[in-house]
Length: 331
Length: 190
Image 1 (tube, rainbow over the protein chains, first blue to last red):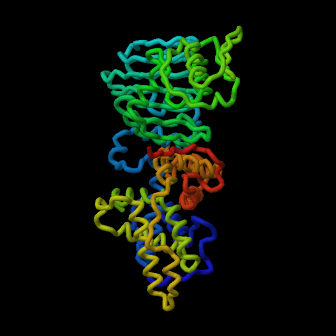
Image 2 (image 1 turned 135 degrees about the vertical axis):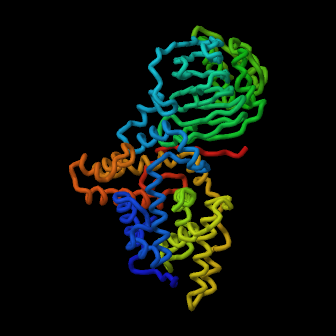
Image 3 (image 1 turned 180 degrees about the vertical axis):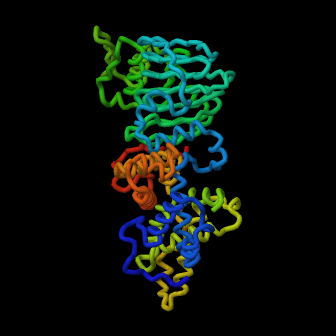
């Protein structure tokens, strides 16, 4: 191999190709047409033997052509993927077909093949209502305030759709079919796990037990990500999903609502007020901006915003005014 | 080319853009970037024990760096600064983007987007060939074009895919792609 001096035909732009790349692509296309390998085509063999770089360009192009074949994931051997014909076929369809990604996400075809249409059963909670339901498959779900869930369950599928609000799911590991919970932002698949799924204010998934496979419902970040117990995925305001490990205490705190509690640990008064307002018709308004910024720690009942207001003013000073329109905390 | 080899090479493709960026900074136009990349693929392909490769990305970097250093040594005149400045000892640490890319953006999604960039006839050829499993001959008949056209479109699609893979940004986005498309994952250490 000679020293490769920069030449006039240097790659024209980043990620550029050179003559060997172009020829390699032509050979791969040709082999795709006529079949066979280098052993069957003397001209190709000669070209490959002429320069190691030709071989490099060729194996690269071959691998690229194969990439269009199947939905392989880093860390997964091809053999595993071959077993899953149905999903592989779906994936290819999504790659090249005219399939709209959104349509696939909505109808839930991507994960489970082609489930039969099942009529959805709708569960919902009103402001301040927290309810636990046992689903037909033996799983349970606890709905937070102002939540709506559509459940489609039969022998072929276990699919719940969180339309709005937040919910905690405890999946019955019995049925062989995976339990799928989707929200406008996520698709969470679990078999033996407990997790919460929230749509607002920041869409998130927190795994309390077991593990789940997480996908983004929209966009291109659709590779499944394994989320273990103690991990949380949150969609930031920039649309990027952060994955972080959270402590067991933090998880318990985030689930305090199931016992009708609000557990505060450093939230600002403003953020805490917003939490209470989700559970109560009587809204809290923090009129003093300095007070609104104060961090606060404590445990409250969701239906006792007055207790909260009193605690705030006794800690930071200020006054509580109650009126028709709600509770005002100010100086 | 065995399945094993093909798989290994395919795991390198998503790292190629990052390796190219590093290489470009290092060679400063003295050598042909694509030549070195091709030589690297060749050497990795030739490697007997693929199973021993722990991190394809680190391995890719190592091979590329070695090839570069060989070239420098073979040059008749090597300025000391060539080596001193080129930071050849340090393989860049895992760019957070690479991690995000691998986790958040499957090959599938990426390929999907690249395919979307193709002209319609090219895309139709790919669809018939790869989804419907038609041969190039059948594809040609269905589209009412000659087999030569189909073969050309296949080569064209492939070149596009490979070229664009080389242009991946750190965060898995493609050059020219707007922000937040694909909203990749971000792993926080805590």
